[in-house]
Image (cartoon, rainbow, N blue to C red; front, side, top):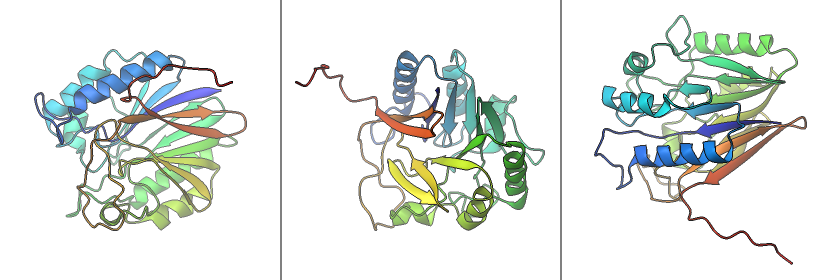
Length: 265
């Protein structure tokens, strides 16, 4: 069994700034320390987009400093709050396509992880997600190359509607195009962020796990067409177990106070 630690929507801001009174940097450092302390045997950390809140250079510099001592390989992805140029200025070694899109893959045993770039910064509506033909063709090539490996695909924008009208409004605009490529491959799990809430679903029969942020969360307010609703609920990260039987997805609320372990008799 292999482990993969997943953070999404960390929304780093400049020093001294907060989001609804929460310090995203402090929350991320707390969550990363918790994950590394409890799962030092993990194979990789994936940061599933919205690395920063304003795509400002000091924000990416803080992330760079936070990750410099991480003992595990890290996959960095972009979300709607990110921008490629300042990201690459801080992480010039980041893997990317010839088109400049931040997409890459990593093989872990019998599994292949594929990280997609759903950022739509060329459009007027930059908070919605989009996968152009070049990105989808690249995905199809990586799926073909995977052979018998089971594939986990990571996206910032989920490939499904969630019932949160505001977030679905700024969701992945061409969900059907992505799903059509995925069902043709050996994809066993999709992992996404963007919504700031733990949600389970499926796209074309493929399980979809949407994970919470380590910072602010989406309140349970279905039907509201406001994508900026936020609430201070426990921060979390995801833990994937890659087993012979399949993928197991856990969500760890690391900001809850530790309780005393007891044996039930």
